[in-house]
Amino acid sequence: MVEGTAVVADEEQEHAPLLQQDFLATEVHANATQANDLQQFLSHMGDGAETVLQPLTIGIELTVVTHMVQLTIEQHALGIAGHILIGEVHLQVGLEGAVGNEGESLSKTLEYMLADWAAAQAGKAVLKSHSDNSELAQQVEYLEKRSHGYPQLYDKRVGFMRGKNSDGSFESLDGFNPQHQTRAFTEGNAWQYLWLVPHDVEGLMQMLGGRDIALKRLDSLFVADSQLNEEAQPDISGLIGQYAHGNEPSHHIVYLYALMGQPRKTAKLVRQIQRELYTDQPAGLCGNEDVGQMSAWYVLSALGFYQVEPCGGRYVIGSPLVKDATLHVGNGKTFAIHVHGASEKAIYIKKALLNGKPLGNPKQALILRHEDIVKGGTFDIYMTK
Image (tube, rainbow, N blue to C red; front, side):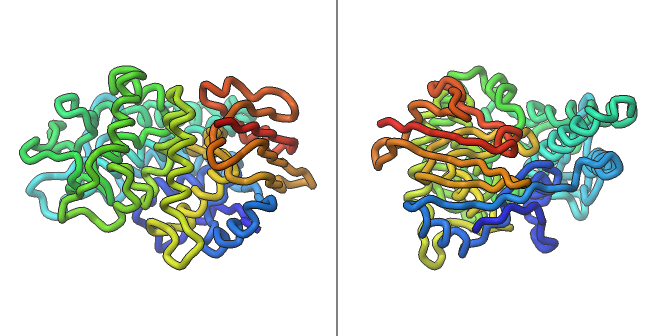
């Protein structure tokens, strides 16, 4: 059995803002799946898997959420050597020449923006039943604005997100190479962190110049030279081009194709990653398990969907591996997944039926909502070549 949870281990601090999203979410997650769960899951893959998901009960009370929102607003000041204010957006910066200057500023800033958005969604959920709480409403509005500050980090001269100096200028372009990890990044480089805007894919496409250009940029990620610099950390692993499946900040990227209107590319890459970067042998993961996220990506993708954005309540349909799977969603209810016509070549979605009704247009992104899962029901996916 794979059991859903949202516990973040104290010792796991490498991507604390990213991991925090699992704690903030008021939804079901399977991010504590361990390697032995993966092996057990694989052993049942052909016969139908049965998964137990336990919904979270924390994060929705007014007192908890208001405290969480306030902490999120203040978090840019925690452990940061310096930050600047551009409009209403705080940007973390590396203070050049300062003692104890803050490294990894670009990565941390993007991850904090993601945390801002996640906290805002929890705040919105509470405001539905506490609409008279004007202070919380103002805080949520502020977090929403701050979460969309990422274009301030986009350097149009090179077409990548880049770190900034304390005066708001971009770091020097001398020797810039998007394949190189520099002190502005956490376990990654400019190729990987360009896409860490899962909460605003439409805005990301607009920033890059529109859908067509964004798709070309996404294509280039997977065919770029995989060479890294000597300073690159070993966590940048599981490479397909410059896509790094061995590290969490990349895990949503293949599903961006579906959200940009090319779901078949999502399906093809999901299958390639499952086939090439996972095995049921010792050391069968291509990167650090990090609280179970490597396995969680596989399990969710094998079920046929993945949550691109934290706290959004949306799951993007990819390419299921299971033939049948049952999710126990509480109160005696189940959500049964049935896959029809799948084969080694039939990896694309022909149609999907939620409780017998078409889910959407399979030529576009198919979205399964969390609220539909927890209600219980059936999800039939029909595959094609």
